[in-house]
Each structure stands twice: as C-alpha cells, then as structure tokens.
Length: 423
View 1 (tube, rainbow, N blue to C red):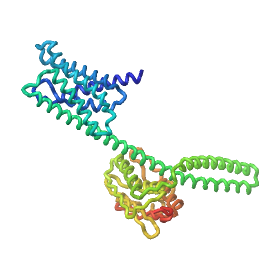
View 2: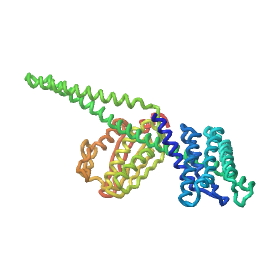
View 3: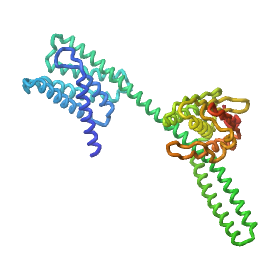
View 4: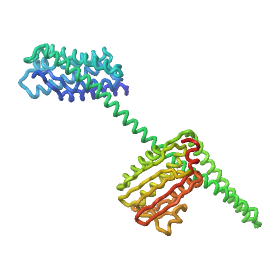
C-alpha cells in the first residue's frame, strides 16, 4: 500500500515537472505545435524512476499537459469555444501517450550503456510521436511536409543527444559526490582510529602505573604490623587490583577492535598529510581563524605506522592553531636526515614562555583556556605526543620558541620504526 502510494506520488510529480518544463519551448512553424524541454525531462525521469510504469506515467502526463494547456488557452482567449480548444490541444496528449508506448516497446531504459542504440531509439520514439502529432493537427503553416519532417527529425536527434549527455553528466557528478562523501567518511574514520590508538598508548601506560601502585600497596601491607592499618593497606591493594582488571578489560577490548584493522595496510606520507589537511582545515574554519596551512614533504614513502603518526601531527597542529589568535601560518615539513625521519611543525603564534618550556610535556599543564566558556585545556595533548614518540617510535621531540614570533616542534623518529622494512 505504501509502495503503491509512493509510485502514485512519483507519477504526479513527474507530470507536474513535465507540464511546467513544457512551457520552455520552440515553435518553429508559427503554429500551436511546439518542441519543448518537457520531452527531455520526461525521458530522464522515466529512466531514473525505474519502478514506475512507463505507460501509466506517460498517459497521466499526456492528460495533464492537455488539461493545463487547454485551461491556459481558455483563460487567455475566453471567446474561443470548448470544442475548438480540445481540437487544438488533444494532439499533444496523443503525442505523450504514443511516446510512452514506443519508449516501452523499444526498451529504452535498458539501452543506457549502449549510447548509439539509446540515441537512435529515443530519436525514433520522439520523431514518430511528433509526426503523428503534426498529422493530427493538420497544420504546417507555410512550410512543406518535407521541411516539417526534416525539422522534426533534427529536433528529435538533438533532444535524444541532449538526454544522453544530461543523464551521463548527472551520473558523473553523482558518482563524484558519492566518492567525495566516501573519502570524507574514510578520512574521519582514520582520524577516529588515530585518536583511539593515541588513547590506547596512554591506557597501557596507566595500566603499568596501576600495577606499580598495587605492588607498593601490597609491600606496605607486608611491612605494617598494626592490624587495622595492615588490613586497610590490603583492602587498598585489592581495590587497585580490581581497577587494574577493569583497565585491562578496556585495553583488551580496544586492542581487539583495532586489531581488526589489517596490519599490512600502508599509507604514504602524501596521503597522511592530505588526510590531516582536510580535518585541520575544517577545524580552522570552525574557529573562524585566517590561518594558512602549508604541508611539505621531501621524501614520500609508505608506513604502516600511520595511525600514531597522524595522532602526533594532528595534536601538534591543533596546538599550533590554539597558539594563533586570528591570523597566522602553520607549516608542516617532512624530511629524512640520515637514519631518521624528521617532522617539523612551525607556527607564528604567541609562542611559549621560557619558564614554561620544561613543563609543556607534563600531564595537565596548560596555559590555554576557552575565552567563551572559561574552561582550561586538559593539557594532555602534548603529553600524548611525547609518550607516543618516545615509547612507540623510540624517537625524540624537542621545541624551540620565540615569544610572539614562532614555535618549532621537531619530531625525530628512527626510519626502522616507521617503515618496518618497506619503502
């Protein structure tokens, strides 16, 4: 019932669109006979909506076009009789009905992949229907039958060619839009997994810290002699052990989920920077800042460590964006220096105070806060970055900064941890 209702709605929508597009026309014989865009639109809609009946649709279209044009003519020329109006416009209804029959017989919907056959079939369908309409009207103005026939054939060919080109043009842009949406989703997924992996590195570190805290609590329990304190220390050790089990459960769950990602997947430096640029530009636009983002690479190679690398660069770039008030430039440079891959993230923002240089990688340290909400930054981003670089890549990071001039974060990663034998 619902499907039937939707089909009826589509048929009437096609009819309305065809009626109004039929008002864009060419009248070459100085009579009521016309070549309109309605036929092109109708052909495209019959192709697009494959689940509706061609015959039913073209019959409804023929009736609607006949009624609409008759009504407009009667309003414009009230002195003309009803029978005369019908005799003027019934041929156009016949045109659309015959057009639908030929469209169905020639199976034009299934000839889209054979352009020449499609054009020839639609051309024949259009031309024959128009010839019948002209014959029924019995009016060719001052033109001979041969000239009218030639005009009908030429216009039919032009409309058929236009139809196939419009169809393939729409299809091309639709495919392009769908591809862009898929790429957008893919980039967002890459960023999400990169962020998850960054959190996973920190969770692993926290698991080790919890293990150490539990061992110390148990050592304290064994050293204490006073029973109340001894029992209390044991309870703390047990609680920490429970927390540790929950942490391990969470870490194992995330690892299992991320492990489904194929470890043999590789991504080039160019692809990594392209993904980062797309997500960063959106962030810059959201913050309404005029920041130029420059991404440069001197050596393009493939790495299967793209998730942690994206997380590092993304955090450093976000840090640079936050350091720029309104207008600035952020430059990301990649190069190979000996056995190391070097990344530099340079910005011309507010810079870092000298007394803060030794603290910026400490957990929770931050000088940034949201001017609108008054909330302080978490101060975890750079801690994440340092932890991943040192513990996952066995690399190093250092920072140089001149107040209100520029800040340079330099990341040095051994190539052997970047490519694992694959260039």
